[in-house]
Length: 150
Image (cartoon, rainbow, N blue to C red; front, side, top):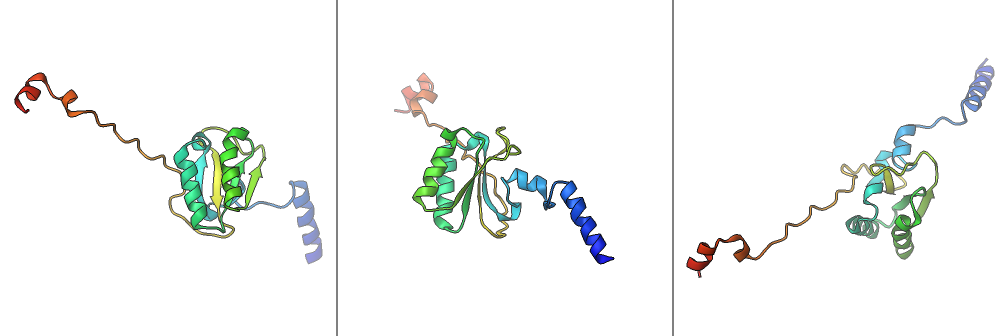
């Protein structure tokens, strides 16, 4: 009997599309890898941000065993800086061309991941807040303030 069940399981598997995936939604979100392996996710809307490229570079310099997963559905101009970075740092990279990986601004454009679980708490790229530009003091002072405070 165990052989009949095993054969039936294999037939069911083949009819449903092959080997079942563990957490398929999570793998689609992180370009084919699991959340627990991800060190950084750069959304499509931020891939051209210089701060994102710099953060990716720093992370890869600190962890030579990490690899770069690149959403292959992105325009090559967006992929190029990360391909160049991976090449310069001799880092493994993979272009992920599955149609499940979208190009909406909030979807993963670049994922930096380890080959095993690292469980990083905060993985989403956060663009640094723009620094407020300081204007000269005299522009904020009234005529009377400037007249009596000099």
